[in-house]
Image (cartoon, rainbow, N blue to C red):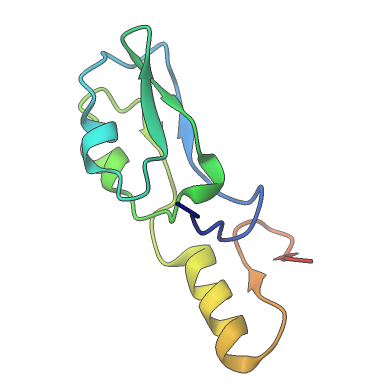
Length: 99
């Protein structure tokens, strides 16, 4: 199955594996299978597939996951398609465009 990459290398998702208690909630709630369990801890296996919805961070009891939730890059991609223009994402202080 092909999965949509929003904009490569711009996702704000971060995981602190030291804080992870291995509950697996991030794996269960992630709509794009960004996480997997490895050695009883969560690991990011598809960072660029993250749509920054924030479900993982909201369900992490240990606060091991951080992500700037919102429409972010997904809105940039869709806006670019609708305008027939280059998608531009404001995920960082410098605007990042997809080439």
